[in-house]
Image 1 (cartoon, rainbow, N blue to C red):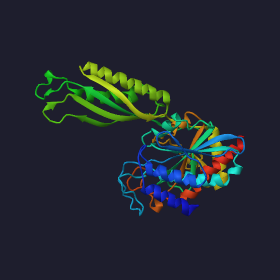
Image 2 (image 1 turned 90 degrees about the horizontal axis):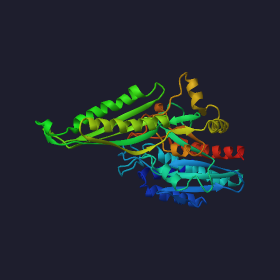
Image 3 (image 1 turned 180 degrees about the horizontal axis):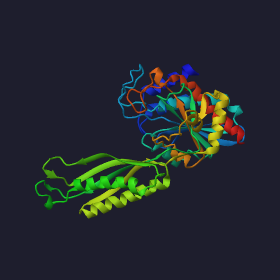
Image 4 (image 1 turned 90 degrees about the vertical axis):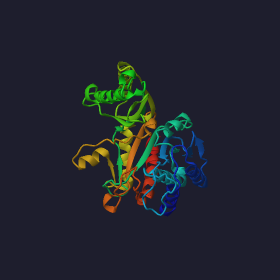
Amino acid sequence: MQETIVSYRRYLHSHPGTGFEIEDTLSFVKSKLTEMGYAPAKCGKAGLVACVGGKRKGRVFLLRADMDALPIAEQSGLDFAAENGRMHACGHDMHATMLLGAARLLKDHEDEIDGTVKLMFQPAEEIFAGSKDMIDAGVLKNPDVDAALMIHVMAGLPLPAGTVVVCDGGVSAPGADYFEIKIQGKGCHGSMPNAGVDPVTVAAHIITALQEIHARELSLMDEAVLTIGTIHAGLAANVIPDTVEMSGTIRTYDEDVRAFIKKRMEEIVKSIGTAFRADATVIHGKGCPVLENDADLSACTVRYLQEMLGPQKAFSQGQLTAMAGGKAPKTSGSEDFAYVSQEVPSIMLALAAGHPDKGYCFPQHHPKVKFDEEVLAPGSAVYAYTAMRWLEEHK
């Protein structure tokens, strides 16, 4: 299948969309699934779902691929680089291609499937909105999903292309929250601060106080980051402005810690505003929960992939880090597949897709990042084989 699915990937790469605006991608994926004999159905704002199997009684295993790109102008130098100011800099074109490859494999082996495999093609992962939108639209129902899997390609990973790292049981990706802070003061001339209420001063105190949550209100074990990324205020050097607007993000590995930080933010921001005679509020925006990996599904997946790829091409995260003599690190990047993991037993896989020694030296989300297309066929097999083996063992 390699030549065919490379052509799929190159089309998807050169026609990227962002968020829910992925019309070219959606049309292409739907057409290829239809050619394979599927009846893909729209799910949510811009998702697709298709099922294969069902000829034998059994459970339901979901395979997920995200399809959206980033608002980045591509500088990869590829012949098929995107030219519309958007770029598949996170590898979602690879994910969608591999799931199309898996769809073809599964269709060819449909009579052997002990149950049903559900294919989830998802938009809007980069804005943490697509997974929840599809769940709300029923992607985990009719038939009800019993377990789920996602793959993420990784460029710049110092492992041979096609090596799979299976997350251990537990949290592998943090919850993420975006927020805005709005401060309403009273503008006046800069020479007469007593005549107004300075929101810039309030903002400075709020920024300092918010860092005290991590420094003095969380334990050593409560890993978290709170970052203020933007501050906007004023237009003139000699004028105290009416308002300040700030925005930022929170990352946590525990849902209780996540809720605690958000609550304390609201209390601190409001109280400091009141103390300085201003009105200050927090507005929580988009986000996603922590990604929970199921321990039993993790162990099964490692075993299945070592059967198929060999013991030198498939590892658990713990096995890999133990071999390197280190501690298994958690990723700091969030992933909205977390919404699925909160509903059904789930597993996240990392697929090495570009060794630094071969020139794949840029990280995800970089305008020059490139991914090794050698992994497309093996990645398709990883999707399909894991689903079929799990259904075989969990009749």
